[in-house]
Every structure is written in C-alpha cells, then in structure tokens.
Length: 270
Image 1: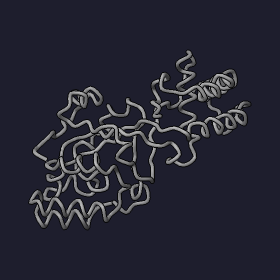
Image 2 (image 1 turned 120 degrees about the vertical axis):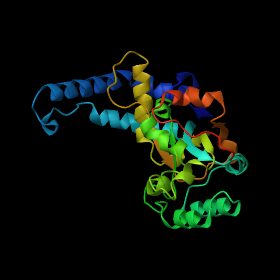
Image 3 (image 1 turned 135 degrees about the horizontal axis):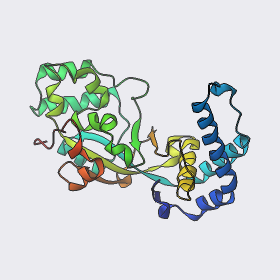
Image 4 (image 1 turned 60 degrees about the vertical axis):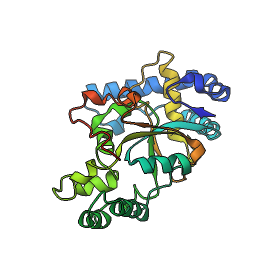
C-alpha cells in the first residue's frame, strides 16, 4: 500500500493510532519550538542558550515508534529527470537502478553509437563528471511532496539537462559539451511507490507525517513539512507507477513550468 504524505486519506489506521494517542504532546512540542524560535528572532539570546523543549524525549520516542509503523508501507515519490524514449521504456520494463559511473558511461556510449553525440563530446562526458561522488553514487533521489516540483531553482536543472547533476555540473556552461545536454531526451517525472524501509531509519519521515497531521488540525507549523529522500535499493518495475513526460499536460500542472524564468527544452526527438 502506497502512502501520499500530503493526503491523509491514504494513511492507514495504525498511523492515526500513534498520532492521535500522542496528539497533545505533539502539539505542545511544536508550540514550544515555535515560541522558542519567535523569542530567538526577537531577542539577542543565542539559540544555544534558549530553553530546551521539555517534550523532547517523549517526542523522540513517539517518532521512533511511528517510524517503525511507516516502514511497513511504501511512499509515493517523484523523481525529476530527462530521458530518451528508450530510457523511458527501459525504466517501465526493468525499473530503476541506483546510479554509478559505469551506468552513466554506458548511457553515454549508447548515445554515441546512435549518433546522437560525437566522439569528442562522449569522451569528455565520460571522463569529466561527478558520478562517483559520495552523495550521488548508488542513490536514487525522490521528492515526496508536490511543492518542490514547482521550485525552478531546485529541480529545473534536472529537466533541462540530460544525465543529471552528476553530468551537468561539469558541462552546462561549456560551449562544446554543454549544448548536447539539452538536445538529448525530454523532461520527465518518474512516479514511483518506494518502500520506506529502503530509506534506512525513518525518523525524519515520521516527523513530516506528524507535522502534516498537526497542520491539518490547525496547528501552525513553521518547520519543513515537505520531504525528500534517497534509496540505495533498486526500484522495481512494478513499483513504477508512471512516467509523466513533458508532452503530458500534467507535467506543467505539477511543475508550473510555463511560469518559470528559464524555459525548459522540451521533447526534441528523443
């Protein structure tokens, strides 16, 4: 069963059991956090000297319990990218595999063999990239709330440039190797139901569920309620819900891309 963070009607009863049983404490915790931040912003007392939250230990205990409940479920997420038609078919048929330098180099070689890019560009892309870096290799990143999909500064580059951040960080401003990044593939949003257990310990996700629950009941939440996370596990084909390409009207409904400052290069014959 897949949950949507923003839609309570998708949450099963065992999540509500934990939240409702501890609602007074959760409210008190968030109210203390907000009051502390307000006092800090209005005064000159360093945050380290502000009063600690008396509900901290109980709050932590409840979120650990909630996290264990959540690990039974999958969470619907959105992965922002740019893909060729062939890559879209492969994901629908085989799912998603955590990225690696070898995978990126294989994708580049496929483009070279298809005549989509020249030998010089392929060689530069293959040798100059960040695919081996610690927070990229072996991780598939998703956003699990819709608002980040409309943040041009956050996700725009994934739609504009093929190969992802690992490639465009090294080439987007290069006059020789940069233009090809926007001439390959089309912007896509991969929708997937990702097992929460695959994120590792789910305390942060539990915190976002608790804040959503409270916000829906009138509590003013000043801390982040949106969530993004990464999985180091493959996402199976049966966990791929759909791929929303740029030509689908829902793409711009989700991203608001028509109002972005920098237009996205669309489907250019991938």
